[in-house]
Length: 260
Image (cartoon, rainbow, N blue to C red; front, side, top):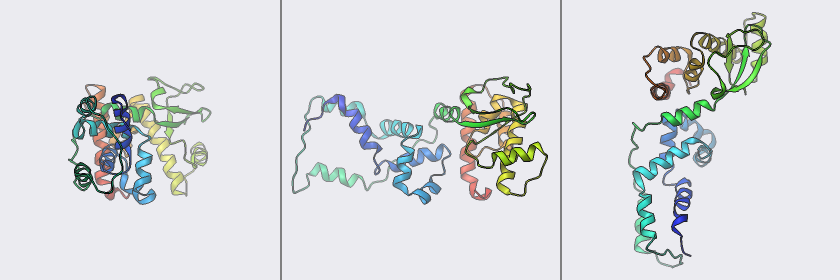
């Protein structure tokens, strides 16, 4: 079997994406994104967690790091352009195959912790979907992605900017809204949590607009942390998303003290 140079990148991407040697690199990138990898592994297992991450932008960044730090893709293409690769079956292991197999037992180099991930953080946050609801008239409800949220957005029914944002998959939204509409204090902790998220996000949106929801969309970023970020002297968009990433990293580092 021969391998065409045009197929090299596709083959390497498929090989690098498989569960095995580079899995730790993908997990490391995921942790920098704020993903609770350890909890996912505990719940789903390492192999399934790896497969779940492959469908996200984390896989793209992981492959970029592998090609930058560990594999010389252009060099491989150059070599294969002058060579032919054949597949054969032998009873004994060839010297090169033995070296390659042993390499799986060696630890990978630690990734650069200063890698600029602002574009990927932005993509992740901009694609986040919220259930939005006007907490003034309670008549406007809609699903909206962060990227669709325009500056100056207000309730199309009553014109208020007191709009709450919460994860759309929450099953307690309806009861939380009934409680807020009737000024009822919840007895259920989960419903109370949703009510607080609606009110706090509405206050943040009222004070900071679209930027408030962007910052609040960071993993583990609560209203207090969001306000601290928004009070900084942010010079450009890249700095904003890097500040969000730093807050995510801090949340992951200290989550055992937060009870989560």
